[in-house]
Length: 479
Image 1 (cartoon, rainbow, N blue to C red):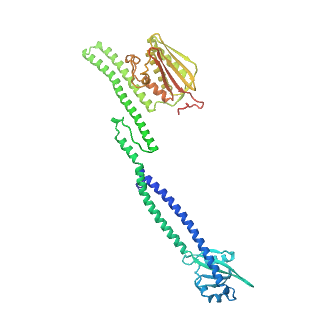
Image 2: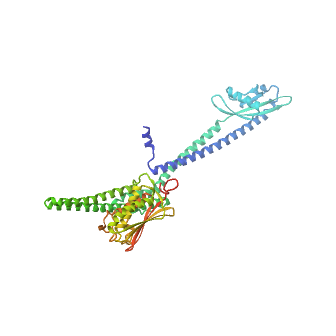
Image 3: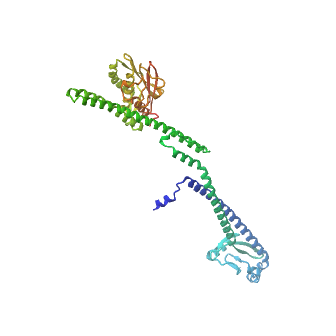
């Protein structure tokens, strides 16, 4: 139940929150200011009350001086109308009361003790509480008498007038603060509505942008640096989304086309076998053709899965230190067996033995993809050189071939899925069209990058750069 009430009380609108916090800040400021004014006014009123009370006490002492200096002070004061009407007492000592006028307020035991303590301590002003809780102030005036002990005149005054003045001031300030807050609530609501109007326009504009119209952008001038930055960031995000959507659509179309090719080939083989009447002599050839297409389809599905894992960031196993030179040597031995069919030589140039961190399985796949790509486009009787070195605190692996090369227009796109350029990446060279894409994703996951330099009919050089393992065992820049 409490959570339901809390949800109802929670302000879900930014406009309501801005208004609430503005009013809370303004109200708190006004209350603190009003409290300060009341405190200053209270101190002033009580000081004026004490000053007036002391002046009154001295005036009474002067007016009643003859009676106060008489031997029978009590009888003389009882005959004085001014002494009877004034709220005063006369003490010879803290324990001897000479006179108490009928107008003097009635005190309880604590109040009487305060009066005697004030006489004993020679305090001029004290505060006491009369019966019924009436607050009082007492002024004491010492009067010397020749040849005998001096006396003390005490005069009382109620603080109710000062309290009433303060109460009236507090009510007036409370009413003023309420009026100010009511006006401020309306004003802050209008201000917040105008300030957030560009946000509403942005929301409405974004709502109208659909997947079929990703080229639309926000053309709203918010009039503030913060909202203008928000519009700019949203437009940049829409740019990235548009690029991603186009890439995803192109990838889906290319993937379906690549999957359709082996499926169509398999269907053709089966239909040809059926047209031959199912003679037993054709079965081995049909089975061999089907196996080739199934292997091609299996490779394509495997590469698609690996690419999806890499793009999702789930490719890496627990990283381990890897000797890049040893790993490249193993890959070159495998690549040499493939290169012999094309009469291509694979050489290894180990200048350093850098140690990197990552997955040996996937880094081996990366190097093999680059090596097979170099062998695939190399001319017969040429060579592919694999070099390993350390440069600027990074491990660098270079693979250079002497093939047909890649045109300048094709270089920016060679790491895109299924991108094939003629003649450098013709379909008859084999492969699924995902080798370089997977290699690039593996390099990124390991905190590295792949760069390419190439020229037509002169060959290409692929350069892999990976961060070295630090002394603590971690890969710099790759958590």
